[in-house]
Length: 393
Ligand code: PLP
Image (cartoon, rainbow, N blue to C red; front, side, top):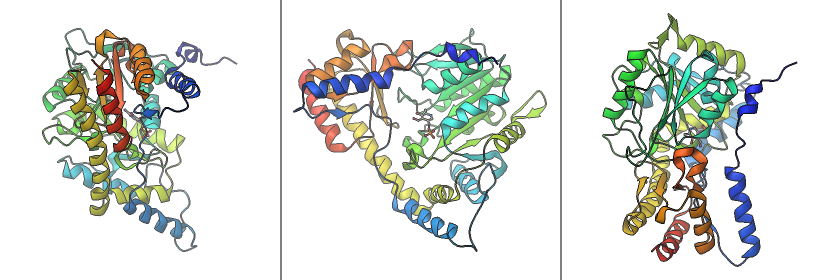
């Protein structure tokens, strides 16, 4: 028996465990201090009433012999796939329900989609990045090339004449940088992919945070994208489903490589390896798209965006460079006084008991940067900004 030795090439991820260790040590030494965490990537507001009601109703259905459901279609119930299509129709994107696949979240799909691609493909990944893209490709032994995000390109890297590869990841609004591609910028990636018959894996997990109507909330707003892109989205950040688990992936029928529709391959993959999302959860997700559901989640998103605004205003006032903070729950700031990411982490923790995430944990280009998230409560965010204002000179 031989193991998959590609796993031995994975770097251990110390980021969140090291943060937890440092915070615990600090709390032990300073029990009187109130530590405020602005590092979490998890939501804090509860499921909205429309979702809870729909799920209660679904639980009752499951408890009655007439309405009980066993296995559903692996790719999701028609009612939810139709609701996703209707949501896209509002974005002026036409989808057929057979192009929509319901899953237990974007992370699984982002990892599993790689099964339908040859391991010989070269993958292009932006740096800094959501670490799942890198690790899942290392596990498969694929060659990875990085495209560099930097302050110069506002952490929105674009292909140049040297960029060559078969699969490219784009995340917009981006985790960790909060940066959002414009339509013009996404068109450059789409044209690049069409020219090379490459495939874009577009992660739109944070699309609901986009409030600027000129910014695209789906890659399919770009002409030609259905011929070159798969889109991943999730109810996690949209509607507080991080613990409830539901997402969806769009694989357009027009996306064909080597005379094979990728939709067919993904359907085969999902129906073989996955047995569907619970009926109760899918009914809850369906309720997100109702008028009431959209209104209620809209208020939550607005709450998080208000937190982001408070942080962005403080950084602007302090003259600290940052991306995100608008149309995104993330703020990516340049550490003041040329501090490294971890130096700034220690500085904030020790001087004002505020915790964020060192950018170096998201790739080499993250060194010298720092991520704050807007998922906390407003009182804490305001208090943290007051404290930061006092310690930054
Ligand atoms: N994509 C990005 C960019 C994320 O930041 C996250 C979660 O933090 C995910 C995907 C995973 O989402 P899900 O909870 O749907 O698995």
